[in-house]
Structures are given as structure tokens and as C-alpha cells.
Length: 69
Picture (spheres, one colour):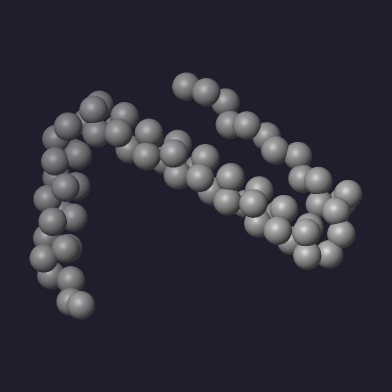
């Protein structure tokens, strides 16, 4: 597995609205990285524990069938 990349915030060098946009971009990058790693971890768990993964899929299917729009 790979190490998460650290991003340095340059908000101190930028002022006002640009700083908010930079921090928003950094937040989105961190969120995207987190979601990629979460998806990878779920796939790994599903390969390692197929019975538990199948039970979870069944529970999810029941939840989706009983969900009201």
C-alpha cells in the first residue's frame, strides 16, 4: 500500500478569497484521497471475508428495498 501524500497549505502566502479557494482545493484533494483509500480497504475486506461481505450485501439490498423516496 502507499503512504498518503502530505500537502502543504500555502494559504499564508495568499490573501483573502484566494486563501479560501486554496484551502477548499486542499480539502477536496484530501477527501478524494480518503475516499480512494476507503474504497480500496472495502475491496480488500470483501476479498478476505467473502461470507461477511455477502451478508453485508444482503443487508444493503434489504435497506434499499425498504427505503421510501
